[in-house]
Length: 272
Image (cartoon, rainbow, N blue to C red):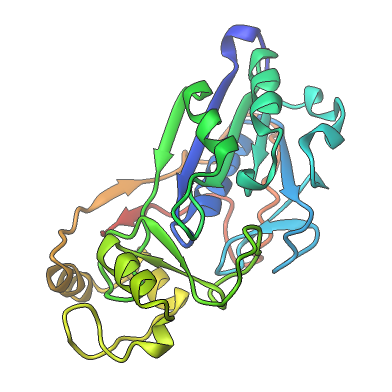
């Protein structure tokens, strides 16, 4: 791939936890692999929830990282030999604006997945500064793990800790809609302490698996419709798929590690 300063760009994918940010980053990386573009994948080294060598989604789909660091300055100049640079958990890298700008100005495509706000709903300053420097900003939503609304843009911490950088998954955080975020923070409790939902109904289970089920392509449409109606939301069905992997000659194979998954992604239907 021929690079020039004019071809460089920054693509930023933001949203709350469990919104599918890493999944989207992996999809874009895989798309570039299919187009025979070399990809340099950067992992935050302190995030070892699922793997030390790979970035991982909450349902443990993995992508082998090229390097694992705590500061982007630690990668040196190795990224210059690649066409695409992907950064997962971008909110943890304080020098992300400087690095991404330098790489994009050198003609590289930079893809960043990051939280835009913390559990207090306060912005990560480094990501807020990156937004105006990006050509593309995509904000994803999750499913509210409290009321099952299809409109969750906030992250609520369910454990008692004032530490801002507290790496965890469904054992420490849930995604919530605005109403549930305000309710849970006003009462100062976790979902386990709240026997009823915001409408006074029966409590529902609050797991990331439930959220993934509502977001998954194979989810029962009627059940998702019902969940959306109950939450006052609506369902919009869209389709997105990766290009066919029928390229002439040899191409670079994606390192997605799920042995049962084909190289091509299946079309994704966003139901909520």
